Length: 214
Image (cartoon, rainbow, N blue to C red; front, side, top):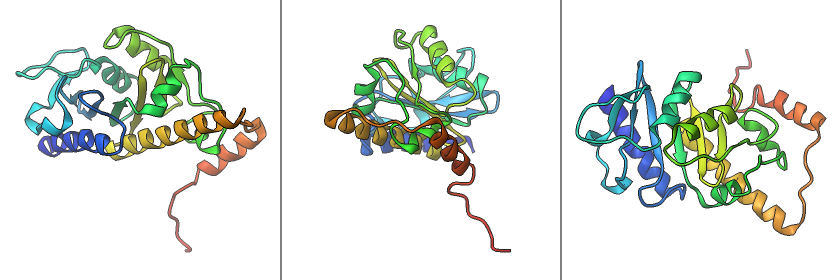
């Protein structure tokens, strides 16, 4: 199982580049691994990454082996400590990064904003990369509600039960970021009302679920 998880992390890193979510050595990916986690190494481009370079480490920062974990490991660890997430993705897609420099939440300009758990896409306050303060800023923004957030003047974090879900949310967030920027070029987007958002949340409760006719 661990070998499969390591391969999955390498695959997710490479897929993120293909999807335009990352470039170079930026971005990091992890999976919950019992009372620890598996996380991508620092400073290695996805095309050069191998399963053997995936780092197993505890949530307090201890690891063994020759490969150093991502410099943003604390974000992943704190998410696992405070939520039930099974996977975490951190990436730097162009449009979402551009929005992150505004250092404010993305409002409900489109109903799919509500798909991340609330009425906005929150933006975590700015803190230096790789710092404990940044990890705490992300945790504060996500709370117990959100499955994604912008990181002020930095990038995005998404989480999910598995890598496919977390990576899909990163792609969805980048799509919304691009659409929001396009809308702002044309004017000021009209935001959904509280009543409209309440209806969206109610619909999301069963959205995308297959049922039976029995």
